[in-house]
Length: 441
Image (cartoon, rainbow, N blue to C red; front, top):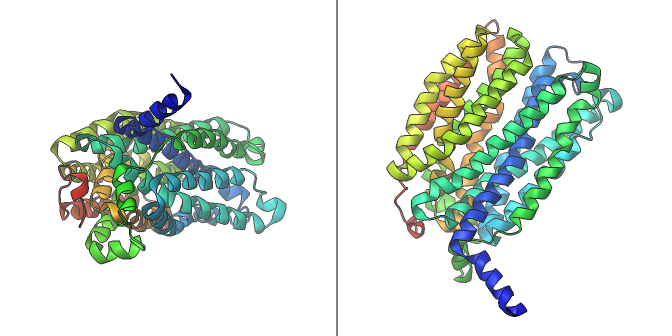
């Protein structure tokens, strides 16, 4: 075989639809693993360490500051969604996926290099805020870009299944982050607070390298390329989506409340259990891992189910199930019942949230036209997720005002799930709609 023929064969193979479908799913999986490994090691550090090393003079208020800083990234996410949507809809999905990966990986690694409050004073939390904002900008565009790219490559009858692998990557990132903190949490306090907490942040560099190698092999979908070559790419995608599909953006904002349970149960649940009830952090971290591991199996199943019966039944059912299961989980935490905590975690995360989590990337993407798909999903999703980011600090404030009770967490989460279910119920079904007919033409 000649060198030229070999090159043409390789190029054709890279552009083959089936090949690109799988590559885009793998790229979304690995990229999401990095993005959410980085986000969750921050969440774990906020609950276990940061109040002592970045806010040491704040006493009990330090935990509130630490959880509040966890939510700061969610303020940057809408801006990240706007930027990623504009770039992704105008210049290509692949390029924005590489950019978001770089920003997240670098900012997370730098968090592990930050000096503490005792070393440089107020400069330490200031730098932490800056890095947290960079994380928010990155993750604000990650899922919308990856979901749009994978959806546009995927076979029509498997669109939810293919896009769900980016979500499974999120859980792998969470599992790796939790395992990393189980290891460092076992260190003596002096080692944990001096260098131990930094190790999980430094390890993100390894996932970044793997993610970049994989994402460079992915091509932009044919649907986007055709739009670009025909000159139909929107000059201002955000303006176009608000002009043609404003109600779908609003629908996504409220439907995105489904993600609240993923923050209140493993993040606030960890904080409440360790700081109020006195449950050892190791027990709670293993419960979180159990929920995530089971979700790796249930999420693809739920996605496949939505490819068969529709997005709306699975999304609505998952939300309502989670709204009920969260009461069992927080009751178990309040009673310090370890085995019941495991059951509650699996019901909340592995069943209720898994059903919604695996389907919403496909559903949100399918609501919008190719011309502004990334922008529509990114902006709607990230505006909705602002509530998610600040849910731990909101619940903490309400709980403190009510004798450190557990019920505010359950009530807050239930309301968010019901609102999401109502928002989905008002939308149209999309699972049988051809790619070129999605959204408003």
